[in-house]
Each structure stands twice: as structure tokens, then as C-alpha cells.
Image (cartoon, rainbow, N blue to C red; front, side):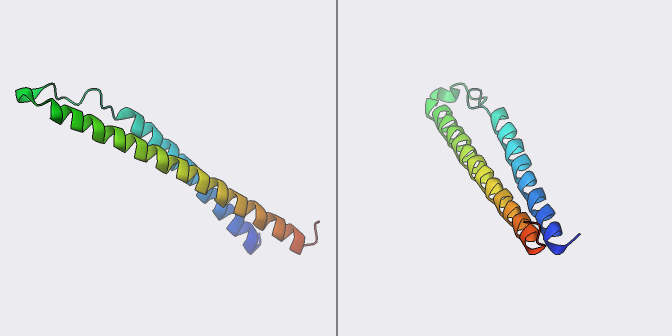
Length: 95
């Protein structure tokens, strides 16, 4: 196994780990709910409940943005790995 093959495998593994971690983050994000914050209207403070909901919504949005960025990064890593594989084939005269 050549150096390019090892680097190719590492890149593919890194891309897959990124995808796996992004999926796990997405699952964890879905378990966080702003609908039941455990705060009804204590001492007539609906502002507290609304602020909790606003911040949890912001958290969900941020996680979705990060998951999208991680997916894009994983795609880029896999594209780089594919180009290294093409380079290896070219250097060995397989093309």
C-alpha cells in the first residue's frame, strides 16, 4: 500500500467521521425541545418562558447550520480523496 493509498484511506475515514458526527448532532438536536421548558408562568413571568423558547430556537438553527457546514466539509474531503486516488493512478501509469 503506497503513501497515497494510506492518505486516501485517512481522508475517506475523516469524511465519514464528519458525516457520522453531524448525523449524531442532528439527532441530539431533535431531542432538545422548546415546547416543554418546564416553565409554565412562574410568578407571572411569561418573558422567561418566551426567552427560553427563543434561545432554544436559536440553538436549533445554529446546530442545523453547523450540520450543513460539516456535510459540505465532508463532501470536500471526499472530493480531495478522490483526486488523490486519480493522481496515484496517473503516477502509476494506470490511465
